Length: 300
Image 1 (tube, rainbow, N blue to C red):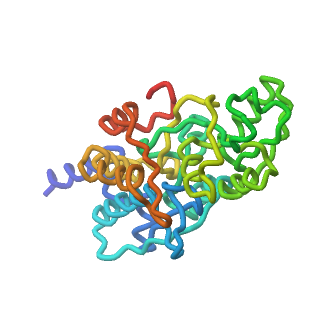
Image 2: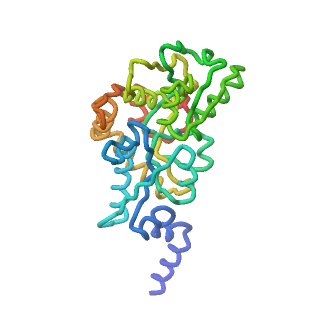
Image 3: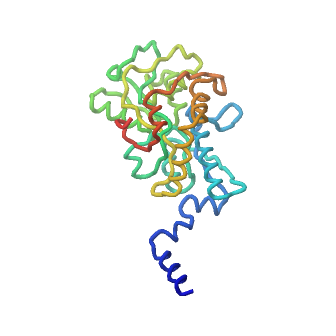
């Protein structure tokens, strides 16, 4: 008996070993509440948006669903309530940080600056920052924006890149901001802005779903190297991140992951049956084969 008690005492004395049996952070919160909260966007096609029936759908939502499944299994829950919370570019990080949402299932760039505030799971897409304009304006290069009115969505890396390029090149751009991507594109559509700076994949979706897709073009120039998109979660929550990383890694390496990509990027999608026709690129294929949360564009 004395030997047994000493053995138990020795195990408990090992830092972290006893604690490993206890839940903490997000997993503890989910277990206690029986629910998980997912942040979603309104118009980030095809990643996270609302269809004509008011349903929240998208590639990022499908990825988050796999993480939710993994959480439910890990916590041995018969039922897990999934709450959908709308977020914007400006509110998504604060809502992750303050615990309002547990995962942000949108079109969010993973970069070093943001990693000071939040965490990310594995990269699920690569995009570069460009601009859209009407063809009649003949704007193709960043320098063509000199003296023009240009909009970007508030709280995005694209806005920061636009402001930095404006200052560095002395372009004299009149910079505008809008609350979301749909509102930004509308300003171009109504000729209240000459161009809209955003991730190229989101611009492609907005053009495809516009009233006159043939009237628009994306720029030849890019404001950035290809940047990684990833599902956002709380910083310094190792157990939850490990679970999310495991779930996304398994998905991206599987046939199911390939089918999921095809569903959203090379097939007709709701609500208008548009096909973005964006095959998976070689850099993204490598990221899927060797999943990573690296925020450095040069790593891809």
